[in-house]
Length: 440
Image 1 (cartoon, rainbow, N blue to C red):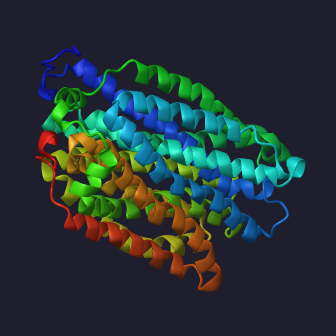
Image 2: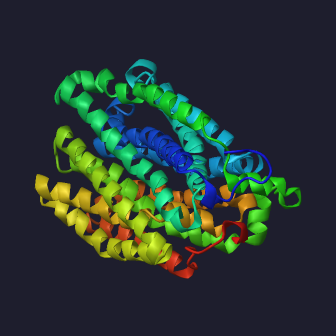
């Protein structure tokens, strides 16, 4: 495909090129979210013992989840900075940068000595590297979604956007498979897992990042961005400023769409994992195996909803997912509290299935809202601002609610946050037939 003036329209992109773009979106996002999810898994199962050994179990868990939550504060900063360069310099270069920063930060976490060795410096180092993780992932999702959306034919944006979304589910599956492999190899009760075994998934990230980097370096810039850059008069010198001058309401509503998504994702993949371990005393092997099944369920329902949204509309499919998520929020904790391993599995698989119903269309829906010259900035900020309320707050607040009111209050909190996404999505227009050049 030529980089010269007169680049073919998206309908003329060769199938081989689209396959390469779809794979680049999938593999890069899978690796970045593998890096992000392994921290969440370790925060639930390992970090309270390794980095906060002198605290009570409850306080150690809260402190561990606090280091997890801080990444959601740095994510919007990363979204704004990487969005600026993504809108000014291009999607491809920016995605390479996010991948490298994320990979190096993750490997470094696997090398941080425990608190027993270097004292308070250990959690400080952990916190610093977690901030860098959040900074990098803040620019990842939007760039990956734009890569698919700006290459795909208009009537297949939902289908090709699916690959970015599948990468998130694949990252969850890979996280649990790697931890499960390490746990099974070393042994459930072996002290080696707590001393060094947990580090292996973080160090393994270096191999995965090398693969993703090779794939991303071998794709071209998107046709829509190249065409926009040729129109010098419409180039955004300050994408952030233009975004908030022209579409501030869309940023707020699109952020609201993400609140329930993050709530279901990180409560299911992080807090409920820790709850199953510390409150219900399920084995690590069971918890990790259920995590694999949850990730597979998310992949399945994400694929179904993404493909349906090209025919029935993004908004309608997402509303169905959020509508199901509200009553499910009240069910998930009581199912877990039975103590049944089967019902624990059902609660996690159900949570990720409901999440997948609303998650599939997002990679086409959110980019279609914003104009090309600040689309990276708009999509990135919308995605990650929603993560503060939906991703950072619930795991922290859940521990307080559990201690003060009981587990039913956690379900109420989840239902309220999912309802925020339902009403935000309802307030936005359908974008299925939106021309990316006329999105403003």
